[in-house]
Length: 351
Ligand SMILES: NC(=O)c1ccc[n+]([C@@H]2O[C@H](COP(=O)([O-])OP(=O)(O)OC[C@H]3O[C@@H](n4cnc5c(N)ncnc54)[C@H](OP(=O)(O)O)[C@@H]3O)[C@@H](O)[C@H]2O)c1
Ligand SMILES: [Zn+2]
Ligand SMILES: [Zn+2]
Image 1 (cartoon, rainbow, N blue to C red):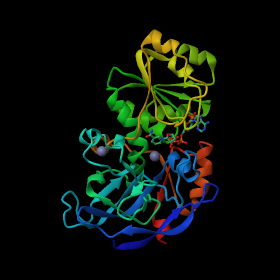
Image 2 (cartoon, rainbow, N blue to C red):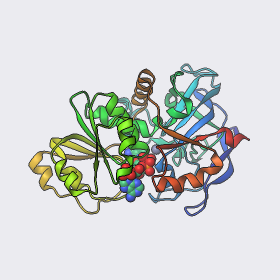
Image 3 (tube, rainbow, N blue to C red):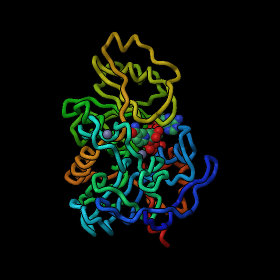
């Protein structure tokens, strides 16, 4: 298969900084769209993956799955997009298209789903490389249309932080009478607040410290509960229909379970791994409460969200950086020192 060499930023080991490298992109095949990448959001998953926190990274890794760009070339069989269209690619670039999950627009749960980075690239028999790069080539089925009225950098985080919180909000049917709480105000958390608020829900934020209260309210939260304050946690008992927990590291879920109402659900989207401490089942049984998980969202649901954002003029609150500052950005993200998502201006890679 013919390939093109393009510039990218990636890492060669779990302890190495990200640096400039070259990667191959395939020439467009019949159903492919080639995209010139304009902006790419920086997700905490990029950092987990670059540092092999999940024990599955193959190096070199080129992260990035919040991609916005313009179409520069299409294959002969492409019908949805033409050169010049403003498009996006999220966390998925392929799936089997035949299993029950694929048929139900739940490609993210397909046993053969291919991540935008770190997945198996069947075309080049290598790992897929993400959006910290000049271009990407993707089958049109996994390309999304971006409303032209939205800020191109601000919309990028919707492709992961947005859809990861939108999917549970939709699955658990959040609407005007819902009481939703979000744990952690970072990239995912701030999108969860904006989206739940736009759906008409009453929104609460659990945060570790006082310093995000004003921001949370400006984003659409009705109240902030300081999770380290026992009196505030006690007062929150039995109140929420749905809690979206975005915290990236192992933490105690039990205090949050207590704040669910009867039949309420705590959905974990942040931390991947064994719980420590374990869950106490008593409140689950005594209140028919659930603890669940959720992974990103399917292609149709991601398009639904982009259209919803276009209609309601919703984008992420971002700090735009150059690709050369990505290692510093990772360190700042670990300290929660960003309001509330870094987005890379990919022009910086071209210069
Ligand atoms: N399920 C999925 O499909 C999916 C998709 C995308 C990302 N993720 C995962 O979701 C997690 C969140 O991603 P993100 O990009 O939103 O991360 P982020 O921007 O770093 O935000 C995480 C937030 O969690 C809170 N937090 C609580 N304890 C923390 C601790 N010990 N260290 C750091 N933060 C802590 C902080 O908020 P406060 O200061 O307010 O407490 C922080 O802002 C990551 O683990 C990521 O891999 C999952
Ligand atoms: Zn992500
Ligand atoms: Zn499938």
